[in-house]
Amino acid sequence: MCRVICLITITLCMVSAAAVAGIVGVQALQITDASAVIEWQTTVSATTELSIGVVGQGGMEDLPMLPGPPSQIHSYPVSGLQPDTDYVVMAKSFDPEMGEYLTCDDGTSPAYFSTLGAVPVQSTTWGCIKAFYR
Image (cartoon, rainbow, N blue to C red; front, top):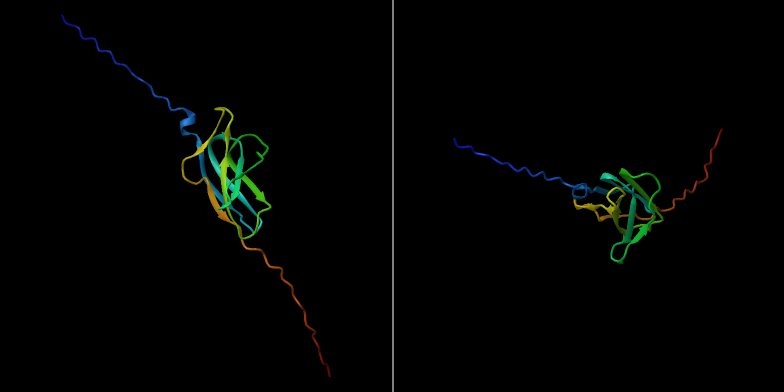
């Protein structure tokens, strides 16, 4: 009697959270001549940080991390911008559980936007209205 022993080895491949964790959908919204709101999402709860610079001037300024618990939805209001200027922003989110910064693999960061031109000051001059009665 012949016995065949079949040995099957099963290898489970676990994808680590770091391999799929990332930043997606970076966009500039509510743009005015002096401000904008930068929004993005992360696949895991992470901090909300941002770097910003003027296109063509080189270098970016790291803005302070926004307070609050880690989140998957991020909104960073930026003010003090110059009118009619092209900006570049880099969304940054730190995953405290993995101990590393997330990357943006969907091509939306860095993101570019332009502030609106300066809002002109409008003045109105009221003329004299003469009414004649009989």
